[in-house]
Image 1 (cartoon, helix red, strand yellow):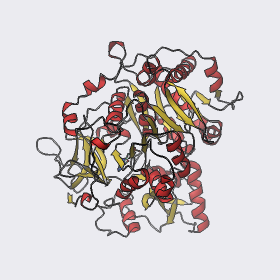
Image 2 (tube, rainbow, N blue to C red):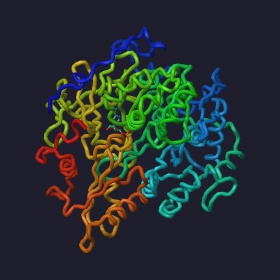
Image 3 (cartoon, rainbow, N blue to C red):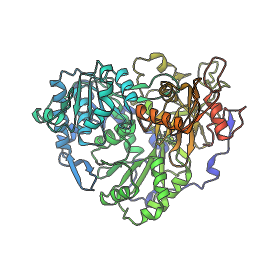
Image 4 (cartoon, protein in one colour):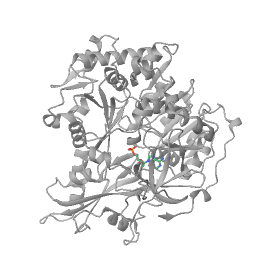
Length: 600
Ligand code: AMP
């Protein structure tokens, strides 16, 4: 256990004056709210289905469509040219019903998996909600994935249906379709009456479908969502989430995002990431607010215009994006009328204190960091509008969430006391961030990998794989990853996936992938390659290998940098010592690699 000085001593805390806030926060007294909170009580804010049933689509749209919010804008899409189109709750409910009917007509059974490989198009939202309404399981993929990650994830989840575009289908799916016998239907959102061979025209199917459909009688523990994430080794992990997750989406939307009925809320997350579903779709709709959806990619000027013109009040974004805005200069923001904005939150990677404070200069508001991961399904630790911010800290656990820092031994394993409970670290000591199991959006398994799931729990806690410390006042501080997983622009990248791809190249004998610091993306992927005899390092080969990986893995996963190595460092059992490579790369002492991630 390593003692550290809390970073709060370097950055002045940002006090909060509740009386000065434009809207009274949902959470004012943190301790009182925690003491009074129960998940049972939180569930009461939802409708439920007769007989203790629960369905996310019902909570997110159908109940609003049948009530006073029916004609409220649910989603407002901002097109490339800045014009908008809106779907009310009533219309969104109908679109979801049509999609559910399409699935029924295609013979899709409850529990079967429907995947998406899409940008932020209206069809995505109908597909998510229609899939859940039908009782099937929704699984989003990053559209920046190349064919290889797409193939693996569709195979692992036995994807039955894929909703995508013609271009993605041609580039990423057609080349691997033969390897996906379970994939029965590929639905193109832009077939325009002329679907490619082996695909169907989704618009035509929707046009023929009825706009009312029964809601599947799912229970709270029925599988609803499948989100893929990566570990250091092995294949991608399919984290299973159930319909009860909506209880956590509701409660965290209320406390961590401070959603109020009149909010115009904008979540910038990619739809392929868990945040894109939990907070890009479910949480705002369950709260009945209007969610902005930008159909385009990040661009500083465009984003400021959206904040201004759409009168965004609550904004949920990510450190890489904020760093890009910071680079563009605060004056870009101050030239815009951001007076509607009242709360800014960020997630996904470490948020540097500079950015938290810069928010005040650019938006007149500090940035509120929060922490969670695919497995937790929802926000677990957060900074709240009414609570002092300690820049660099992720904040304090949500009501209903118990978090702790578990001591680790020299091998990185949790220390378990004689009583069978994990030993917790003292204040300001680094250990593994752990959560007490039992919150509704906790993953219920990794698909077909029970042992891997079981290994995530020890001594009464779910172990997150992140290193953290907790200060004496209960604020949590991120220290680094406990494993070799890479976080680049918010994407979690398993080094093994990158290495396996490179090793398919005829010149490569061995490969290792690590994350190296990058001022904007947090980290970028760097690969080290040992060549087979008969191949010589050269710039041409470097470019070829990067291109090879990019074509297969896609830009989000492929290495940005690549070096040749005469021999890669390995343990006696033959495992590549990525940490040693990283120590060398960062100029850290090679002997002690245990703190490599510290102070990133
Ligand atoms: P993902 O499952 O892809 O959402 O990635 C989750 C991981 O992202 C966490 O385990 C952390 O390593 C990292 N992460 C998420 N939020 C934060 C944060 N606020 N500060 C630092 N790291 C974060």
